[in-house]
Length: 212
Ligand code: URA
Image (tube, rainbow, N blue to C red; front, side):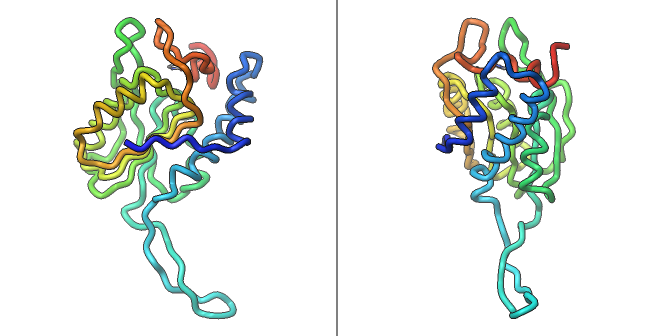
């Protein structure tokens, strides 16, 4: 698995405001959206394209279009929804599928409660959106699920990651015969005893949408 942490002052700036407990939900949503667009630029560096010929008003030339089948963007509900618009801004023609997963707060294991994805993902590049890579349970399960359905290239985009989660994802995906890339805004220090990222930004879903 490749791990990319783009080094850019705007990413660091927006992450600093996201971490700040005084940042309210509307501001948090806007910053998360902007940050994802910056991460999406890096995450889509290897999106597949097909050469095309065209004519400008001045002369014939060549260029590229996104290849078919189009990439699939998969936000993990609920917090991944806060990253969807930022990703779609760069890939407006991608299809969007949904996976609903939540963490059992006692066992910290991921439980799937919703699935709206194509059964056949053969030949599709998949972009998975989940703000926090903590224990890795959700993204490990997601990677296996997508590979089972034929995905042949998976990029995961997170705002923050814990070293423990990266290690778990590395180990669990090493045997999968599919290239996996993680693009993350920052790698933090560690997880606490409740599975929260330290220093992190708290519960991403609650900060985006409020406590429900
Ligand atoms: N999920 C969150 O929203 N925050 C964390 O710190 C860990 C998991």
